[in-house]
Image (cartoon, rainbow, N blue to C red; front, side):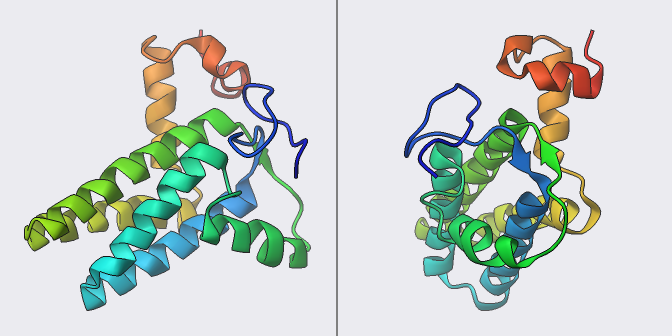
Length: 168
């Protein structure tokens, strides 16, 4: 994994893959759905820590430091015969950043005793991950596209996205 292509051309531990395998992304999203369901069913704050760590790790390194990402890319995905479906990395990283923000918010509110707010944030993550896992619709990627279209995210952030989404 040391020389994988990245969005910045960087290699090594803190490099996010570009392009990303859409099948792997959807499998990771399925794992996030399962985590959220267990959190909502049990209320275990420790699982919110695991959820938040997973998102933070995926923002920083893609699947490298994420237990779920590593499980999917190293164990599950190689055993599937489905063709690789490449998609740009920057929107997926942006989506992971949104997940990190929401899950950290859920952790902070859970630790502060605001369980209802924490459950609401986990539910938002559950909905977004379900859309990705089961419908192939990445809510964070859609928002990334909107922000690119309005110039909030510069086009050079993802040259491939400009062609993919017909921006300008």
